[in-house]
Amino acid sequence: MSPDAVTLIGTAGVVAGALWFFPRGEFFWGTITITLFVFSDLVDGNMARQAGISSRWGAFLDSTLDRVADAAIFGGLALWYAGTGNDNALCAVAIFCLASGQVVSYTKARGESIGLPVAVNGLIERAERLVISLVAAGLSGLQTFGVPSWIGVLLPIALWIVAVGSLVTLIQRVVTVRRESAEADAAAAAAEGGAA
Image 1 (tube, rainbow, N blue to C red):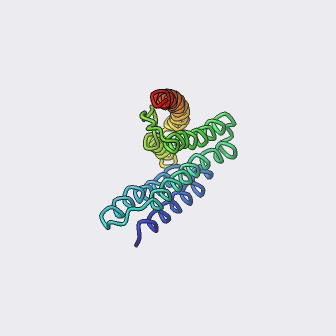
Image 2 (spheres, one colour):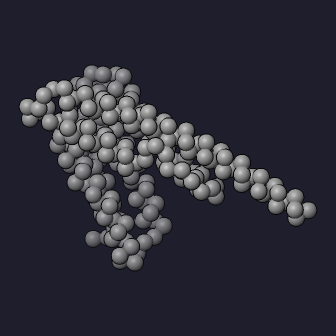
């Protein structure tokens, strides 16, 4: 099986698990399904490197499908809160988590595409967003097995943490790109002035 096939299968599994289980409020089984397929994200790049077939296409595909998987996870949570979960505020927070995760990734990619290092990781990266959200969702899902209902507050708390952390990360990256672009423009102007 090729690394690209592993990437595609992993993403399909995450999307199916998130959009089938989460909108129905089955957070435990959704988290288990998603977690099983998320591990393919750790395998595909390693497979490509060990086989000596790493490519720009593979890196692009992996990065693009990561965004699709993330959108499915937070989209599934938003669907739950918009429907049976009956909480418009948390639906909005889940949508914000979805959108901000996409924009956080975009700011780094766009900054790098114009030649800047974007030398900041930020408060909450993709891994942290997934771990915080999925652990909270999985634990909240234990209510169906007779765990006390107070555990259900973990998911809303986690969504708020991810939302605020993503906003802070976005601000950190925008400020970094602004500083790095000003420094690059000043260095280019100085080089032009020296050449003249």
